[in-house]
Each structure stands twice: as C-alpha cells, then as structure tokens.
Image (cartoon, rainbow, N blue to C red; front, side, top):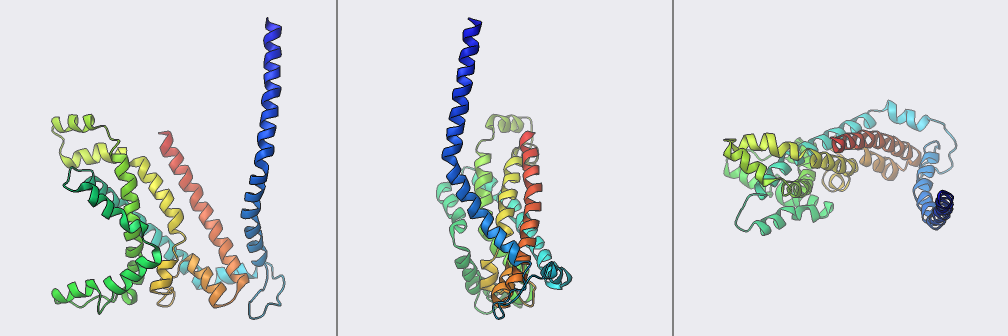
Length: 302
C-alpha cells in the first residue's frame, strides 16, 4: 500500500514536472517578446549615453562618462531634480489631504451624492494637455482668467501665476487632476469601514474629530500608501502640463527631469546627453520605487 502511494506520488511528480515544463515552454515566447521590448530600448539608451552623438553633427564617437560628467557638473540637472522633488512632494501632500477630506465628505448621506461623486472624479479623465490649456487660458490667465476676475472684485492685483509662481501653478494643475484619483481610492476604503465600530464610538461620546483620528485614519493607512506609490510613479513623469504652460521656464524654474531630457534631445539635439539624463532618471525612479514598494509591503504586513 505504501509502495503504491510512493509510486503514485512519483508518477504525480513526473506529471507535475512535465506540466510545468510545458507551461514554461508555452509562456516562453511571451516572456522573450516582453524582455526584448523592455531591454532593447534600455540598452540603446545606455549605449547612446556613452556616445558624442548630436543630430546636427552625427559623426561622434565613444566618450565614456563625459555625458554624465557634463550633466552632473551643470546646474540644470540638480535644479531639475529639485523641481521634480518639489512637484511630486507638493502634489502628494495636496492630493492626500484634499482626497481624504473629500472622501469623508462624499461618504456622508448627501442629496444627489451619486451625481456629485461622478462630477468630482471627472477631472481625472481629462487629458493632461486639455486640462493644462483650460487652467492656462480660462482660470490662471492674469488678464482674462477667472482668478483675475475674483482679484479685481476684491480690488487686489491679480497674480501672474506662470511668471511669479510657475512651479506652484503647475502643481495646482497636476493636483487638480490627481485629487479625484485619491478620493476614489479612499472613498472605496471608507465604504468598507465597520459602521458598528463608528456607532459604538459615537455612543461612547467620541466626537467627529476623534472618530476621524482614531478610527478612519488608521483604516485609511494602507489605501493612502497605495495612492502614494501609484501617484509617485506617474508624477515623476509629468510633462504635458509643463510643455503647454511654461515650456520649462521662466529659465529652468519649472524644468523637471523628463522635461530636461526632452530639451536636451529635441531642442539641443544632444542625443548622448539626453540618453545620459534618461539613465539618471531611470536610476532615481528605481530607487524611489524600491523604497515605496518596501513601505507598502510593510504596511500590508501589519
């Protein structure tokens, strides 16, 4: 009997191993295509980053780390990294703060709550280019914009947003687009909150602020971590809002890493320098992603 069981296990193991080999064989074309799709552009970017290759003077050659040294010794790269950090950090703070408050508000029993939720998340589905044009021409314009009209009503001088506080203006546009995303995720999490716990806290005399602080916020810790991770990945590549509104200026006041790579490649025609900037951006993005994934994994294990 025991011998029979061992034989069955052995036969099953061979069958399982044969099935696994077949599965790997069937998946291998997809895996190979995906690897080529991901690795070939990265390898080409890495190769160009070691070349002196300008579109106006294509005849270059191997220059080692000169492109990296040129970028690291210049002011533009560090300023663009700082702008990227400010933009990502500011938008994350705004989206988490207003997204949490909006989710709590939209979770209340309101008249027309369904329509209000639909209208509230609508900005997330507006294309970045269209959203940036609306804000630039209809809202933040210092002469004809809605904010300028309010300033005239209050008899104060309108702010020239894209000249005086350009990075803040772009941050407002990007935050306007991402607050609905945070609201949607956090609202979904709030709807899974145990209402008996909330009612018990209310009966024990806990006020709205205490219930928010000690029950809602701990419950939203994981969704907030996920929102931060997803938004950070996308906010590191903000480009359309900058191109439409300020083109990286005034000077380099709103130039972030993706826009610096764009300017180096398509405005200065320096493919080698742009490739080096792209590799630096990839390395920085992977470092950020590593810590974000670890923090989210730690949050999930609690």
